[in-house]
Length: 133
Image (cartoon, rainbow, N blue to C red; front, side, top):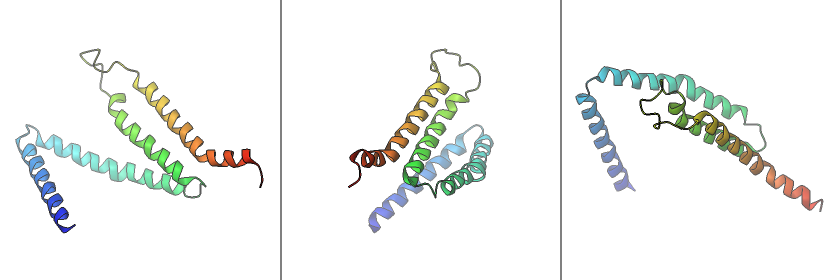
Protein backbone atom coordinates (compact mmCIF):
# COMPACT_ATOMS: atom_id res chain seq x y z
CA UNK A 1 0.00 0.00 0.00
CA UNK A 2 2.77 2.40 0.94
CA UNK A 3 4.71 1.55 -2.25
CA UNK A 4 1.70 2.25 -4.44
CA UNK A 5 1.28 5.63 -2.76
CA UNK A 6 4.91 6.53 -3.52
CA UNK A 7 4.64 5.33 -7.12
CA UNK A 8 1.43 7.28 -7.73
CA UNK A 9 2.89 10.35 -6.04
CA UNK A 10 5.97 10.13 -8.25
CA UNK A 11 3.81 9.78 -11.36
CA UNK A 12 1.82 12.82 -10.29
CA UNK A 13 4.99 14.87 -9.83
CA UNK A 14 6.23 13.79 -13.27
CA UNK A 15 2.93 14.88 -14.83
CA UNK A 16 3.10 18.22 -13.02
CA UNK A 17 6.65 18.71 -14.31
CA UNK A 18 5.57 17.83 -17.86
CA UNK A 19 2.68 20.32 -17.65
CA UNK A 20 5.00 23.00 -16.29
CA UNK A 21 7.46 22.40 -19.12
CA UNK A 22 4.66 22.67 -21.70
CA UNK A 23 3.44 25.85 -20.06
CA UNK A 24 6.97 27.24 -20.22
CA UNK A 25 7.37 26.64 -23.98
CA UNK A 26 3.92 27.87 -25.01
CA UNK A 27 3.80 31.11 -26.97
CA UNK A 28 1.02 32.52 -24.75
CA UNK A 29 1.38 31.30 -21.15
CA UNK A 30 -0.65 34.26 -19.88
CA UNK A 31 -3.64 33.08 -21.94
CA UNK A 32 -3.34 29.59 -20.46
CA UNK A 33 -3.09 31.03 -16.94
CA UNK A 34 -6.19 33.15 -17.63
CA UNK A 35 -8.07 30.09 -18.90
CA UNK A 36 -7.07 28.06 -15.83
CA UNK A 37 -8.09 30.89 -13.52
CA UNK A 38 -11.42 31.20 -15.30
CA UNK A 39 -11.98 27.45 -15.00
CA UNK A 40 -11.28 27.66 -11.28
CA UNK A 41 -13.73 30.54 -10.81
CA UNK A 42 -16.44 28.80 -12.87
CA UNK A 43 -16.00 25.53 -10.95
CA UNK A 44 -15.85 27.00 -7.45
CA UNK A 45 -18.32 29.82 -8.05
CA UNK A 46 -20.95 28.17 -10.24
CA UNK A 47 -20.67 24.40 -10.69
CA UNK A 48 -19.87 23.34 -7.11
CA UNK A 49 -22.68 25.40 -5.52
CA UNK A 50 -25.17 24.08 -8.10
CA UNK A 51 -24.14 20.48 -7.40
CA UNK A 52 -24.43 21.03 -3.64
CA UNK A 53 -27.85 22.68 -4.04
CA UNK A 54 -29.08 19.84 -6.25
CA UNK A 55 -27.84 17.26 -3.73
CA UNK A 56 -29.64 19.07 -0.91
CA UNK A 57 -32.80 19.40 -3.00
CA UNK A 58 -33.05 15.65 -3.64
CA UNK A 59 -32.11 14.61 -0.10
CA UNK A 60 -35.77 14.07 0.82
CA UNK A 61 -36.70 12.21 -2.39
CA UNK A 62 -37.41 8.52 -1.70
CA UNK A 63 -35.27 7.31 -4.62
CA UNK A 64 -32.54 9.88 -4.07
CA UNK A 65 -29.76 7.53 -5.20
CA UNK A 66 -31.36 7.08 -8.59
CA UNK A 67 -32.10 10.79 -8.90
CA UNK A 68 -28.53 11.74 -7.95
CA UNK A 69 -27.17 9.21 -10.45
CA UNK A 70 -29.38 10.60 -13.19
CA UNK A 71 -28.35 14.17 -12.35
CA UNK A 72 -24.68 13.21 -12.33
CA UNK A 73 -25.02 11.46 -15.69
CA UNK A 74 -26.93 14.38 -17.18
CA UNK A 75 -24.36 16.88 -15.90
CA UNK A 76 -21.47 14.88 -17.34
CA UNK A 77 -23.25 14.60 -20.69
CA UNK A 78 -23.89 18.33 -20.82
CA UNK A 79 -20.27 19.12 -19.93
CA UNK A 80 -18.97 16.80 -22.64
CA UNK A 81 -21.36 18.21 -25.25
CA UNK A 82 -20.99 21.87 -24.27
CA UNK A 83 -17.96 22.61 -26.52
CA UNK A 84 -19.90 21.26 -29.50
CA UNK A 85 -22.94 23.36 -28.64
CA UNK A 86 -20.96 26.56 -28.06
CA UNK A 87 -18.58 26.25 -30.99
CA UNK A 88 -17.70 29.69 -32.34
CA UNK A 89 -19.04 30.15 -35.85
CA UNK A 90 -19.16 27.63 -38.64
CA UNK A 91 -16.11 25.40 -39.09
CA UNK A 92 -14.02 25.77 -42.24
CA UNK A 93 -14.77 22.15 -43.04
CA UNK A 94 -18.56 21.60 -43.02
CA UNK A 95 -18.09 17.89 -42.27
CA UNK A 96 -16.13 18.61 -39.06
CA UNK A 97 -19.22 19.06 -36.85
CA UNK A 98 -22.08 17.84 -39.05
CA UNK A 99 -24.58 16.57 -36.47
CA UNK A 100 -27.42 18.37 -34.65
CA UNK A 101 -25.74 18.15 -31.24
CA UNK A 102 -28.45 20.07 -29.38
CA UNK A 103 -31.17 17.69 -30.51
CA UNK A 104 -29.01 14.65 -29.83
CA UNK A 105 -28.23 15.90 -26.33
CA UNK A 106 -31.94 16.39 -25.65
CA UNK A 107 -32.66 12.83 -26.82
CA UNK A 108 -29.93 11.34 -24.63
CA UNK A 109 -31.08 13.39 -21.61
CA UNK A 110 -34.63 12.16 -22.20
CA UNK A 111 -33.35 8.57 -22.25
CA UNK A 112 -31.51 9.19 -18.97
CA UNK A 113 -34.68 10.63 -17.41
CA UNK A 114 -36.90 7.76 -18.61
CA UNK A 115 -34.35 5.20 -17.41
CA UNK A 116 -34.14 6.87 -14.00
CA UNK A 117 -37.92 6.86 -13.66
CA UNK A 118 -38.07 3.21 -14.70
CA UNK A 119 -35.37 2.23 -12.20
CA UNK A 120 -37.01 4.23 -9.42
CA UNK A 121 -40.57 3.00 -10.06
CA UNK A 122 -39.77 -0.53 -11.26
CA UNK A 123 -39.76 -2.25 -7.85
CA UNK A 124 -42.91 -0.38 -6.80
CA UNK A 125 -44.76 -1.42 -9.95
CA UNK A 126 -43.61 -5.02 -9.56
CA UNK A 127 -44.95 -5.11 -5.98
CA UNK A 128 -48.25 -3.61 -7.14
CA UNK A 129 -48.64 -6.25 -9.85
CA UNK A 130 -48.07 -9.09 -7.38
CA UNK A 131 -50.80 -7.71 -5.15
CA UNK A 132 -51.09 -7.74 -1.35
CA UNK A 133 -49.76 -10.69 0.56
